[in-house]
Length: 510
Ligand code: SF4
Ligand code: SF4
Image (cartoon, rainbow, N blue to C red; front, side, top):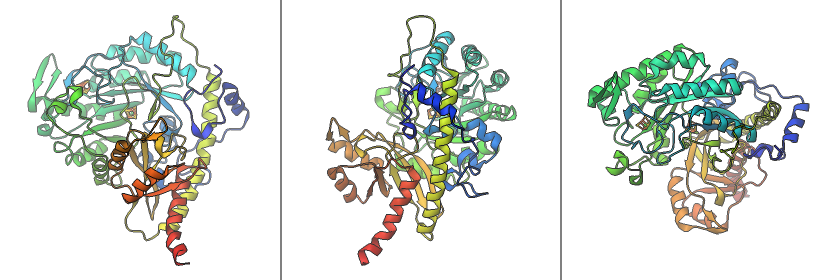
């Protein structure tokens, strides 16, 4: 175990070995505190960029439950990794965005097929990964079918994992049809985080997305199938919330079918106690062989996703950093390392994760978080001073490979972290994905065209470095470009860009 961590964490790039992480234990750790009570943050005020975290909650008990979960906390996704294990092979419903040959598209990137695992194989894989990736904090079952239809395999996996690695957070993702029957069993295994995909409230709309379900020993179709699915989803959501679980609701945004309806979905699931709502774009490709792919149903553009989320309002409790991962995803969100990590040890004895190294990693993250929170609070104050009275919010696309820092060249970015900036501060808005511009040292003009489409509605791009050619194309398209090579905290760099922009007319007059 001499080359930890395998997944780079930019804020901690000087810590590359287990020995470094152990050395971190010798230093007093900064206590982990909920947003709003962190060092450097003005008393009684949640930083603007964290106000939507946990639905605005500053409750310390809730923060403890999400602070290491890269999906439930936007802050945690800078530092922690998750892993899906594909142990649930069968499904009890049909979605028009799935052809059942691939993994469950409700929590995974459509078109990807992962190796089916037994619970015992899954546990060996988790132990193998955890021994190499101290960032691993969450293991979830999200398919390849429905995790709770054939629940025995899912529950057995959780049972084995609980015994082997008690510090892991266990997570399950389901279409909700079987959820009411499984809440008690999940609760008994201390599964604290449940995701339910809910695409509709109105059965008419539901029937256009889910043509049939299998329930109560028979197959149901059309409006009746959608009505039963809806009732079971609501019942399961209420039961999970009543059991004290944190429930995330995924909704697939399908233009022309449920896009205008998602306001109703958001209001209903919030009223029933959902903790987060993840509005994710339909990915529709004829090559995937799905009904929507083959009938030409398009997915939304990044700008449409942004507008749909904004339409849900300030209090929508949105998850905005979902990457629609593979069902066998391993690593930090947005940087899947499932190919890099050795997943098939030849012997039957899986490597043992070192608890001391895992604890050391968390201590180091605590320090990095405190530093980030203080920098974000200073940036917020600067932005409030500079942008006071600004009417329209600005959108800034940041090139980052993690750690909450601007630490990537434009040409290497495969995703842009988009932040909204206005007189009230800096707030994370979402992630937009595109193939990287630079290939083998040369730029690709076609890819730049696609990137410009992906960046529709964005005002500025912030990165470590950018070539003259792409800079000119971006500027010609009306985007400002800001380079900053210090690998600073994202909010710090955005505030510096805004201050520069504000000073530019003054400099021009002088
Ligand atoms: S619930 Fe998942 S596996 Fe089942 S049909 Fe829908 S997307 Fe496919
Ligand atoms: S698909 Fe979204 S919610 Fe699920 S693990 Fe990936 S980022 Fe998290």
